[in-house]
Image (cartoon, rainbow, N blue to C red):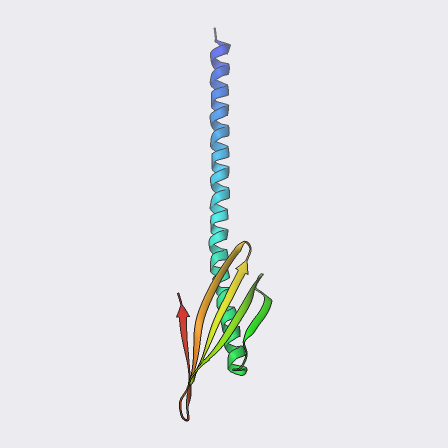
Length: 131
């Protein structure tokens, strides 16, 4: 004769274990996908920020007296915003460029210093990245 009490308990334990494993697998899958999306967005935010730096460099090249803010600009499903400050020191003009790239919930900021050195008859641009 089969003992239904023992069989019922074993089936319930098996169902609980299977349910637990299914929930754990779903959580693992969800976190893995989320992590990959975050890593992709971090890279994209950095790329967008670099794009903003390039826009700022072009703007300064075309208009060396410019300083101020370039407002939020849409770019590749995200945006960048640029702040340029300008300072004169003897024969050198110092530009500090800050570029904020944003996509999803991720923002990345890059900064660089751009020097315009003017000698007697020549000028030279020097870019220094800030880490």
